Length: 432
Image (tube, rainbow, N blue to C red; front, side, top):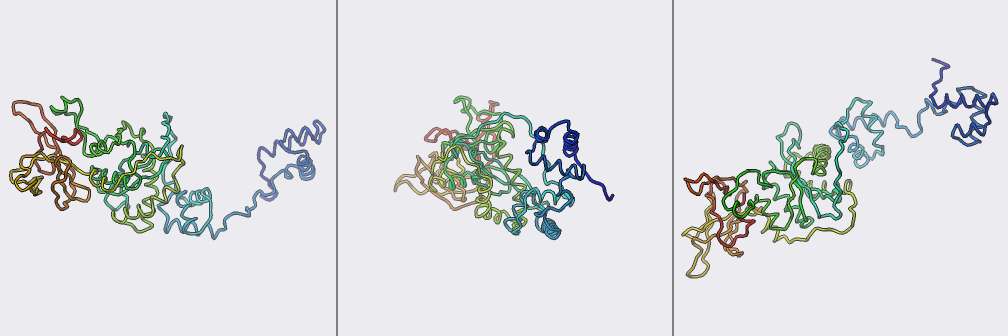
């Protein structure tokens, strides 16, 4: 209605104080203190109030368009970009894309208001944080890495789910490595470990959940394990033990919250950016992660560590190839061959008159699929690459009259190897 003015509580309080000044109940000096302004500003307010009453105290920019406000055309342009190209992006991510790719310098709050006014809700519901005891970050990068897998429909709601394997550094939140795999298993963890070792070096420890690829989840103890007082590790656990990396299992998702929180952020950003780039396959996604995303992610989200030094230990490519692998114990047959699940590896003679028949050997399958056979820490044979296959368990009774069972590792349909009696270290025996 014409002639109406809108005032707020602050302006009503100012009018009351200035009325006291005009009625000479208080001085203007005291009024300036009560109003929280300078004496000169109090004089201006008094003059405006005496001339226009309450309307003189209303801010003069009220109901005016700000000089730096977005034009209607620019608002429509931003909303059109959102609906056409950036519908999967959250507010912050959309703002970054507008600045980087579209050349539109707008603030995150402006984008948020535009989207809410247009009826677009927040991408993720923000829950109030619960009270939990904080674990201080490690001082040096490389002291503790947290890794995990996140099954999700990473390439859109119409595609089959796959798994993103990722590792972050506890000291500075850096993304140490990431790759897409069909499922979370031993092969996936070994590939992720090889990536971390080649890009950064050996971490001192890794923090992880109790996935069956990382820790023994069965309750059974073999006779040998009972006698020695510990159980043989999984394949991944064996590799970590050989490399001297401490394996720390977590007993709740909150315990390894730093990697869990990263997956929420990665689901926000990766799905949207891969859709924007037209990435639809695992190979394309893994190549893009290495060449583009990991470096950009670390530039955006990496935090300064407590110290500038590093605890990562450099490691050679040859060590990575020989150590990060699957491993099986086997007995060489009388025909100097090793048989594993239909795979036959011929072993050349040790000398002109001797061979390796009935010897206990150590068989490795490397991440490139190739095979090697080792005897007393010397490689004695190799075989071409075959498909990497997740190991399976086999239950075997040593004595039919004895109900005690032993868990032994097998390769596909291979017969379980008997317990080592020779040169194999404990970390390589009876791997699960």
